[in-house]
Image 1 (tube, helix red, strand yellow):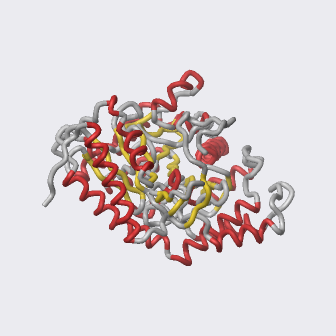
Image 2: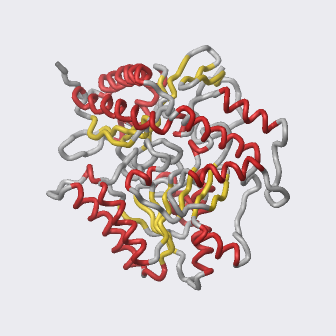
Image 3: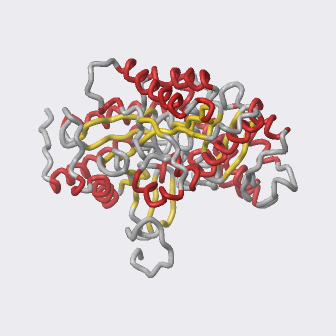
Length: 450
């Protein structure tokens, strides 16, 4: 029972039932209640739950060895997963370093960038620019890059205070610019910040190609991506793509970077890379960065579980399953179905101000006025209340505050990449019911749709 005494603590005291099992896109509690995993956990379970072929491959590795420290042995799972990963990367990204999670991946990417700068005789380069809002992790280095006030402010005195530029939330802009011009405007804000900080001091720019928890599947105008790449090249600033959430097929490409033909200098991945079958992540860079670091005495960084064979066997099995089932392609197809369903909600619910995303990383945002995009009153606590109403009805979605963590409400809908069109319809029926209940509870307008 969920009210049994517990010695665990997490973010809050919000009680939940015990998990019994997972099957595909579904999770079941010990009382037999079924939940549609409409957020893939925390955008992790890309291939669904309890895939028997993946479990069999993990078991086969368990029967051989569960751990081999990377300084003592090479392992076939880590070498094979690295090779498979490189085969899925843009040309030139051919060196892999494994980690156990997204925060570790971002930290590793920044440390690689810094050590590369030292090999180039540029010890003054240390500033890493990121965006506000954004999310890059909860460890101290990653947290300093994160733009989300509730997570960052308690620790602000302990952080260096890395510079931020506005995230390209063009849906909030009220100007006469085209989307292309808006994208360029936000990219130029990065250039201005580099100049302000002193280009010789700026090490890297880190960005989520499609926004995650802090911005709710935010997609910039197409013009933004290429211009950011040009600006980084102009000043010798390394471009780091945080694909912790977007990587491994979530957006309908293996990397979200592929949508715009961008090759970052470093890619950070996790979440769907191991798909919940093992703690796993990676950074991928080119030998242009890695070889000078190794020549200078090695990468001064590491984690005990980096590249452990059991996690890598799981990751390799996940990637093989994605290829065999065509899940990246399914994410693209089902993403269009899901986006159309979410957009249709706007006809009945005028407090849905925006729907956005790519592939099966989508979101919708509540507002009090579509014309001004003013958020709902904070006191309604919409971002948690709708999640609870959906959960009670057997649907799991993921929410955060939209405007830097202090106001606004967005909801991520990111089901496993195995989802089918009928399952999307089932998921949306529950979501509509939950929104209807929230509207009635909060006294929000609902329109009749012919």
